[in-house]
Image (cartoon, rainbow, N blue to C red):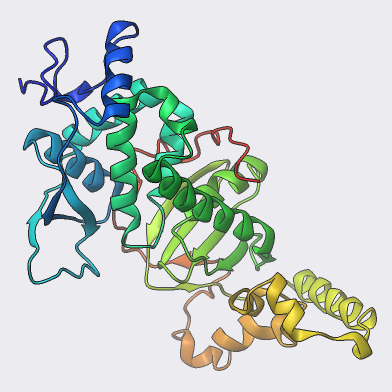
Amino acid sequence: MTTCPGNCARCTLATCALRSSGKGDRDARTRSRSGAGPSAPVPRDDLVYLFDGTLEGFFSSVFAAYEHHEHPRDIVPEKGAQLSLLQRMRTIETDDARAMRVHDGLVHQLGSNDYERVKVACLSDDVSAFGTVYRYIVYALHAGSWAASDHTHPDVAAFDHVWRAVYNERHRMLQFARFAEMEGGVYYAKINPRANVLPLVMQHFAARFNAQPFLIYDEVHRIAGVSRDGRWELVKTDGVTPGLLSSSEVEYQNMWKEFYDAICNQERLNPRLRASFMRKSLWGNLVEMNPLASRRIQDEFDVHPAAAQPSGAPAQTSPRPSPAVARTPHARLAGEPGAPEPHSDGPE
């Protein structure tokens, strides 16, 4: 059993700084405000932790920092890491058992709602986000559950910025995800978020379309979310072949496009103002912004149907990701696929 690096005789490393209520919390709060005490970590400018980019790998890195009595300057994914000449790196192997101990400790100390915020912030595409989350975790463990409301602290303010950016991106994807009915009754949507928010998006739609099979493909992170009967899973794939639009879908898209064009006032068009309300990267998946949207999927995959399908082979009638399944970030600690979406009001 590993002893607590904070010299706490009543806990192990799994719940380091997770003291019971009472005098322990008051002492931790005093040390946090004064910056003194044996639990206050000392930053090391020359040390950077590298991990595999998953939530389990990040929690394993947090565990390693306490285990080695170190406070690394940053924790970054191996992919895309850029180090200075004077920094040294340490690669942390993912350990599910250690990750679960950190998970249990955070839920115990911070509460389930604040832990969900930590998990959401780890979905950011910013390579510096994990270092920001790590510094917030260190501060929160030593300060107590009230740390989340200490918005004047620089580590808390930086964490709030990352969390809000990810949650707002999730909100945009909920707004602009456009489903199209394919032949076979499966609904398909494609998104291009600036954060890995597909797990959050799947939680939302699976809870509302629990009787409707659908597939959402994240073309930026190359992950597909597949839902059927209210249960969903994430599949790592290089691409998705949607197949053909249903005849009713083509009709509905054409009618919507005609309506959109009919109510448009050409004399008051303001493309710059429109781009300020909605970034242009979202326009390509919208029917009203793409004149060929009602035929785009068919034209892309059905130009030469004889060449695309071997003789006698059945036609693809529903979206189908490639069979290569890989472990995706937050696959295990995020809970079972299809679990109820945790309640959160989100940022204003």
